[in-house]
Every structure is written in structure tokens, then in C-alpha cells.
Length: 381
Image 1 (tube, rainbow, N blue to C red):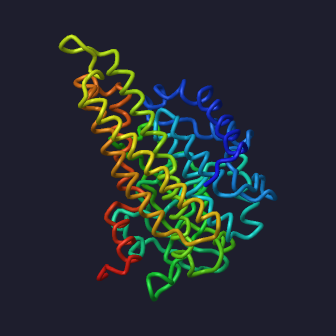
Image 2 (image 1 turned 90 degrees about the horizontal axis):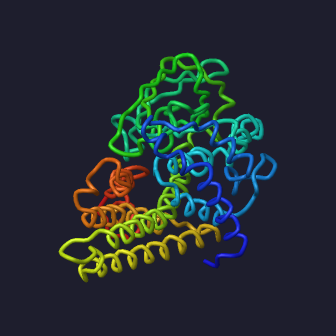
Image 3 (image 1 turned 135 degrees about the vertical axis):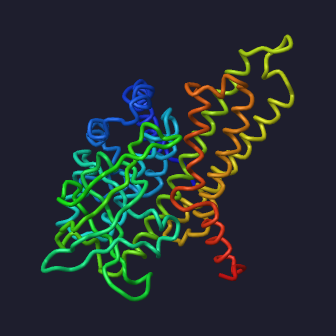
């Protein structure tokens, strides 16, 4: 994948915004366990950062997917993964299917405001009994006149407390579980919706909620694309979500490694800096090498995706490697911080807690392995 001057210009502009408008507030947002999504997203929308790959006619820049992924890479400079994750939901998780398959009316009502930063979106797939097993979800949308009547619940919804709308996967019929689902845009101020905050061990600045639907009425025109094709649309969205996670990961890990180098260079024990031990600087060199290998795999997948290829296997590999390497990097780095790294306020402690979710969210490691082995024709499933 060739990185052009235009890619670099985008990254530089976004990084300047992050350093000026995001990172100075991270500690406060982490403390209050929420960040002002509408305020931040509006600023980003005004600068064009929320619609990089979206259609021009709805306020986007119309650039190819590689520019979205350059933004994802730059999100790695954000000092709390919770904010970066919330942004990824807006740009690459809740909006791809709407952008590709939604009616013009639906895109004008929900996609355009999301690109402008006037609305916050969320994605509703996971349920308490159906996380990685998407086909087994239970939320239903029953037709009644011109409406759908929605009942059920969604779990672990990023942006759930602040979102204006949800891209929700529901069962809209009987029959085969891969053919009875539809994606529906649900306004989050609809009667019958209740929200409960979920506290987590990481991503503290990201508001996460369980959402309950009790006879929530939504016009059938809010369905994205064809009825019964929601599972397929969601599998397509997952590819962007997984590539986003993989593209963001190397920069975050580099930041963790660089912070550890800085800390261990200044910290002394037994008459010399912690960094001045071969076991430490060799290990950091090994980790940096692994980071570069992940970056190469991810951008290879991105290049293939831009070319219109099916990257299910490559995206799953990149997502799997990103989750496992983030755990390895943060665990190794925290060790070199010693007791100071185990303190809640330490930057490496936050990264250790935040990055653990990558091996779970968006498809657990075990699901990625199932996908990969199936596409290698070696899985009995």
C-alpha cells in the first residue's frame, strides 16, 4: 500500500486536532467515565473527519477506504482508547451499511447528520445471550401497519447513553437464522427505550450501555436495504470494524512502547537505568518488530479491500493478531514500570486495561480463528 502525501496531510491535520482538542481533556473524561460526544463530534464533523470515505452528496469527502484507515491509525495517538473506540463506532461500525444500502431519504435523515457531527450513532448487535454468535440474537421487529414494533435488548453498546440513533440488527421474520434478519435505524429517543450504564475495567471515557426495547415503534422506511439481508450487511460492516481495530492498534502500541522507553530511561535501579539492561531493550525491540509486522499485514488487507477483493480472511487475521499483540505489548511494558505501572493513574495501566477488549469486541479471538480455519478449508465446522 503506497501512502501518498494526501494520506500524510490527513494524518497530520487529525493529529494536530487530537493534541489540541482531545488529549488535554482525557484525564477528566476518564474520571467522569464519559466524554462529551456531541461537542467533540461536532468539532470533528466541521473539519470533515467523520465522513472521510462517505458519499459527497451526504457531506462526506468521497475518498477511498485507505483514508479512513489512515484516520484510524492516527486515532492511536489518543491517550484513551475509549474515545478512539467511540469515534470508530461513528465512522466505521454504525454507518457503513447505512452509507452503502440505505435509501436516500434514510441517509439524509441519519447519515448526513452523523457525518456533520450533529448526531451520534451506535451499533446494536450484541445481546446478553448472543455476542460473537450473531445468528442467535433474539431481538425482534414485527410488522404492524407501516411500522416495525421492536422488542428485546442489546448489550455493551458503545455510545449507548449519548447516541441519537442505533443501527440495530433484528429478527424480522422466521426461518433460517442467516436470512431472517434486517438492519433498522432506531431513533434513541423513541418511547419504550430504556438505557442502563455498564461499568467496565477499561475504556472508562466511553459510555457503554445495555439498551432495552419494549414495543418500540419505528417506521418500516427506517430499514436499511432489503429485508432479510441484515446478517449479510452486518458481516460486511464487521470487515470495516475489524480493519479499523487492526489499523488503530500499531500506533497505540508504539505509544505504549515509547512511553516505556522514556520511563525506563529515567528510572534507575542497581546503579543504572532500567532501560540499560539487555533483557529490557531487546524485548522492546522484539515488540516493535511485531508491531511492524502487524502494520504490514493490515495495510495489505486494506489495499485488497480498496481493490474490491474479499478480505474476510486477512481482516480476521489482522484483528486476531492485533488483539493478542496488544495484550503482549501492554503486559510486557507494564512489567518494566514495576509497581508504578500497577497504579490506576499510570498511562501504561490505562493502556493495559483498555487494550484487553480488542480480543473480545468485534468478534472474539476464537471466532476469528473459526473464520480463518473455515477459509483455509481445514475447519470441520
